Image (tube, rainbow, N blue to C red; front, side, top):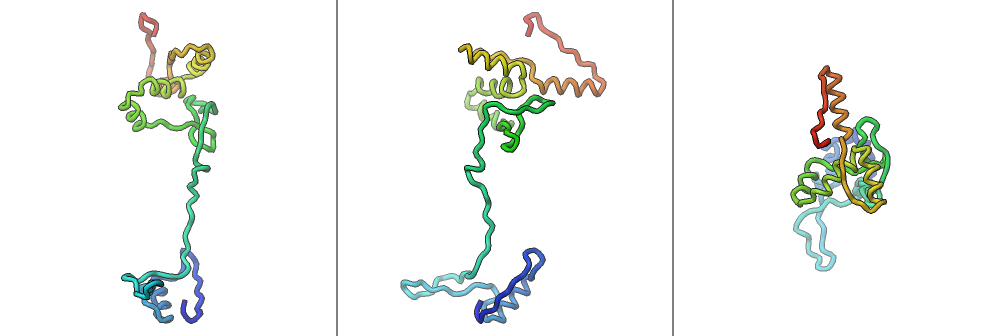
Length: 171
């Protein structure tokens, strides 16, 4: 500031707006804290007054190198057998409801079937899928998802007798 006045104040419990305006007026500045700047080439003043001085800012650390994450295989939840979530747990990417709708709208039915079955919580399907890729046979036969088994166990814990029936085709 003008006249060499140094001011320090705590961040969250410091000077109020009124205190700042009073200090600006004491130093001979406008209470808005803005001052007139002049164009260095023409010498004409700029249309608007500008706040000048040391400005403090926080840098948000959102860098691509910190964000990028990929997974081929990794840990699964013990209860649902679905891939863990998040980069810290080396988890998979969550495919939410809106993402499923978008892929469905683009006609990516086979990709969706793979994402939501053998790449998710179909425990025997994971092994069968790996074996079929090694053999060169890309047949996708999803089994019962583990999340369905968890649902049945929860309903049984409420006292409901759930029995699964098989059709004549064995499906």
